[in-house]
Amino acid sequence: MEEFELRNQILLGEDSTRQFKREPSADAKMAGEIVAFANSGGGRIFIGVQKDGSIAGVTGAEAEKVGEDVAKIAWDSIRPPFSILSKSIPTADGIVVIIEIPNGASRPYCDSKGVYWVKNGPDKRRVQSPEELARLFQSGEKLYAESQTVKASTLEDFDYNRFERFYEAKYSETPPNRHEEREACQRTLENLELVDSDRVTVAGLLLFGNRNRLPVLLPEMKIDAVWFKGTERGGSEWHDQRTITGTLADQFDEGMGFLKRCLARVQGDGSFNQTGRPEVPDTVFEELLVNALIHRDYFVKDSIKVFIFDDRIEIRSPGKLPNSLTVDQIRRGVRRSRNVLLASFAPDLLNFRGVGSGIVRALKIWPSISWVNDTDSEEVVATIGLNPIAPAA
Image 1 (tube, rainbow, N blue to C red):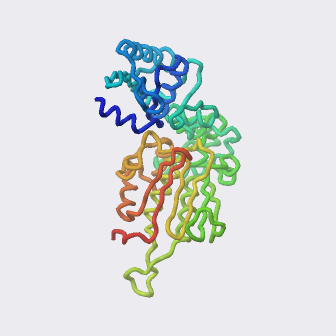
Image 2: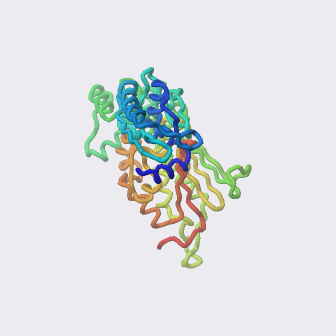
């Protein structure tokens, strides 16, 4: 990086990827800064730059010591130990040391006191709630919501008849009898991570749970569907609304039913006596709804929202995009699984293939689809525009 590029970076100001410091902080505080960047996608600390963006600079000897000290902090005061790179950029106003902090490969990181930090705009924020800490571990692929057992559950909450039908269809054989081969049956369910001892996992309930018990055991894992009058989410009038619970297959079927009921049918080029075609092809909703059910963040205690307006449909899924996935990658068919277990069962239980082609296919049929990855609200919003340019035949 040359001085010109450095100054352009400084002109952008501080944000979640850039931080300015006149001089290094004390060891403990600097460790927290590095942890926050490593847990939040990485970034740069510019040493020798004032908060207002003016360059104060450091001397050559100071620059060398800064690099050595910060590398030692990253190795000695962060768990697990972390490697950083430093660069010294000469300018007309003195040397600026850039500390390059990559997105940590062994997330989450904590400081020597066991405190976990994340970026909050240009500042850092301590992770305090168990739910946020669980999501931080999930982002590092060290913890999965779907594999957690539900403490209030018992094996009576697992619908074994539904599981038998699935097992026979998938493997062309009958699973162990739950009454006569109890140990073999238990082992089969545990190997599939559907149960753990005498408790059912989140995945086990979402795939094969007793429908009457799911609203009690997993109250947030549902779809809230509203068909509004008008175009404003803050509107007080609606045509219809539903709370849709049950297994993922139940939620998918009823969610699709709600969408189909609320959308018009258009005549197109057909005769008056023909039933016409859906305003938006079913395939578009199938892809977006099943992706919301499979890939949502189940650590976030909130429901999927299906909002229908006069000019658009929104499918709002709890959680940010997983594993550094971007909206542009979604549009190109790139897939990253947050819930690997659910995704592995989905092709046999839902209209889901899991190879990334569904979104590309939906866009080809109906180009008026957009996504917003709202990292502040921890929500992904897929919007289907209504009455757009004529869709592809």
